[in-house]
Length: 134
Length: 134
DNA sequence: AGGTTATTTAACTAATAGGCTAAGTACAGA
DNA sequence: TCTGTACTTAGCCTATTAGTTAAATAACCT
Image (cartoon, rainbow over all chains, first blue to last red; front, side, top):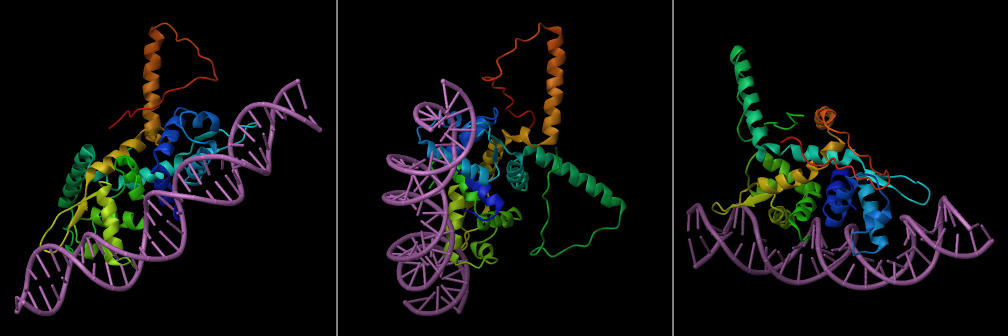
């Protein structure tokens, strides 16, 4: 199994059965039996999928009599989304527009201050990460 | 290899080497040699990671003399982000605030209309999905 | 043509994932 | 305490993954 949290999270998401389980859980907490119902698959298989999801931090489980209700756990989702967010500039129109706006504001600000020093092209690492909205 | 696009995308993201490659590519298009440089790993191994990323739709490649420059391909990122977006309600504060606002507005609307019918607790499936922003 | 550089393909290996059936555990209720 | 329900664990099998080295391909350079 993957070592770092982000890897196990993405690995857990890389299975259609598990994604379907998560989609069901988005509607609300439920039991293993109910989660298993739509699938043409043995109960142990579902049980293992749930274990993978739990290990990945995507769900949490508790005990209630003989049931083991599952629910969505936010943290892993947030981290996966946060990582993808670093690439948002590449596809999100509004992100680009916002980004451009921020660039404009920075440029305007810079106009009042002394100009920044230029750096070599090859080694330059412009940090454009972080979410600008929300 | 995974069958559906979303599965292969998430599977591709579930490896730290591949994520590091993508992070490097976020800084700009580059060659296989330069991508391989930071890793203590054979070139064929990197080549295969790139193949996985390409197959997943996360990068695209072209030819330029004897080099094969790689760059980020937006589509797969967008789809992965879109899927995660269905769960944004669970962790995004501002999403919740917006959601709450919409609830308020609906409630206000409902105040002018006849009251809604109550449903049984056990079988209730509160649908809170769908993206409210974007 | 012949060499150098950049990259991929082939063949092999070890580890992991995901499915199954059968057996085990935990709790509820008679 | 015995039975049923709701799971989980164990043991097995097969396919896939991620790495290796060695060899092949592709394009430039002399």
